[in-house]
Length: 359
Image (cartoon, rainbow, N blue to C red; front, side):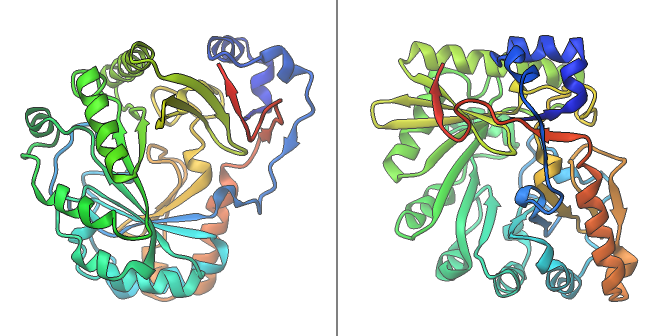
């Protein structure tokens, strides 16, 4: 697991760790290993290709975009940025808004593949035809489908529009391709933390061979903190009632995942909130140490690069440098942002790290 070195001396943090079933005393006896600046932790480029979306989900973090963020980077600008910084990253994700609304999506993906030498991850709500994506299968190796509910009434209340049939058409076609498909649902009480929706979503993924992941809400207000707490609590209670067994997965330089199993069915809860560091991560109002800012750098449509979706301190405006093709300035900005979140973070090798442990 990864925490701040100062956290070991902090009473509030120690209480939080104790509540999350982490052996705090064991941590005190371990020697911390500093995370190298050039580790793969911060080498995912997340390209926000558009501000536009055809859904209006109330919980959406918009990848850190503000209400004033505009689509001012051209496709040529984005391509130039990707080519310039390719050596600093190991992979690339394309997100939005809804990226399928970006008409040059395939062109951007192709340049990313050629520049970085690896296929692209794409996150979409799958509510628009994915024919072009499916016909260019070589450009992608993972599709994340944001699908929180299958109940028509709940879907409309959550997303602001009816559940379109194209979602089912897209997923039926994706099954035939060698994609790694993840269905991601944010755990929200009143929508998808009940038996009906959990079983519906898990059955849907089971039939299609998709991986089911529930994510916790990244809150922006005290009301959303309450939603976060209630959502995770209800989810865990329902999973236990349904007979799923839980195990913790420690991932190096990352958050903890809870893997729920029942017979051949698996559901992952990406539970960022199990490691809390109030001194180090104050961007999110829940103060959960999610490592999000450490593992991704986002290029926004207005030329800003950011790490954490909520952080306002670590935002660098590269628009003028991108538009004027200033290679050295762009590289310096990205490197500075990659380093800005590093200190004083340390990696603690716990017993069982990299493995699954029953809890």
